[in-house]
Length: 481
Image (cartoon, rainbow, N blue to C red):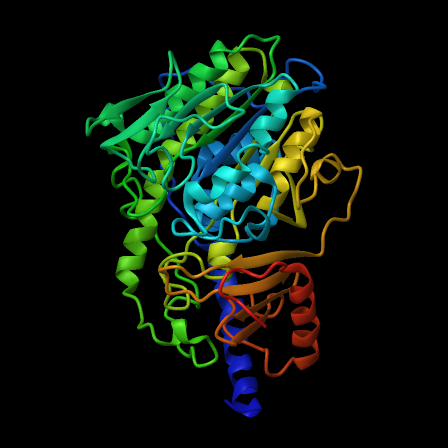
């Protein structure tokens, strides 16, 4: 493609981008409120004291949740977004379940944990076991926290009866990556054992996880600080809503952005160019099912906050809500994750801590899943060596500046996406694939990544290539410059 054709392509997508942004802002989404009739109303402003030296900490991590789906969760909006800080630039470095969870638990990139994929020699639980001795759980357990993981742990976990170090309470999907029905959980209560769940409505996994999380909060003495990691399978595909939320969004409008069925992908790498267009009707149905599946997660958040209130902990608990990665719903002809595009690497990220974090605030800082473990350890007064930064000075207002870039890295095992190294700054995304192909996007001018400007911005590409070489070390298996 010549420069003239590239500049021509720049003009028309830019007009499309701004029109799409306007349409997206005025789009009406029909939200079905959570049924709260069976619970006491929760006063989100209630506080039971000044922030604790050792706050309780709740980390909620959804599975494959897109950033734009946060708006269809009314309780998350009411109790977390309006009462905490929302991050508009939250990035995961390797947008796939297992490597991202390894990063969340350790605060280390894939090139440090060695976990690049969900299975194979460089992926899955087996690859993570060497890192289990130094996680946020072991760090907090060492300073007196009661710790619990309830939900999804790692892909390929628990072929044997085994509870990782640092966890006092354990209730995790066993022998599978997670499911909505017909699954087993490894339960540490009364000695580790497997508990089967079937296909009854009461077996819906998000609800089971919610009940166990609430029970953990209520059973922990007030004098003991706790760390609770809640990891529902939702809205992982194929998304399955709870029966009570089936068709909640059946008539809701779904706006598909200009990247869906992108007309000209000639400047994209081969794995995108070789894919055909998606069916917009299928993408709209998929989006609605994801929204419906998240409604049970919304209720989980509500019940957790009610349990904190009822046990007198609302004002002394740090709550973090995020996802392990996003997912593409047809953007750039892609329908999964692993790719370095915005739909896969950007995630919801909200932090609430009454008295320390301003209610209803937003941040444009570039934060990442590599920062979560260090942030939690900092608030808890624990020691943990990480590749990330503690967000505590940022969220409490003692520091306004943060990092300038996040590493992007991925290894191909059986996937279509080639191995890559990259860098995401506040304005640009640069990616170098093992195939030698490169992409550069100016996200300020082109937020939907429609035009690869690597060929027309050589100085910027050179600078970001050098930064990638410096930061993405060691390189992923199968990658070389």
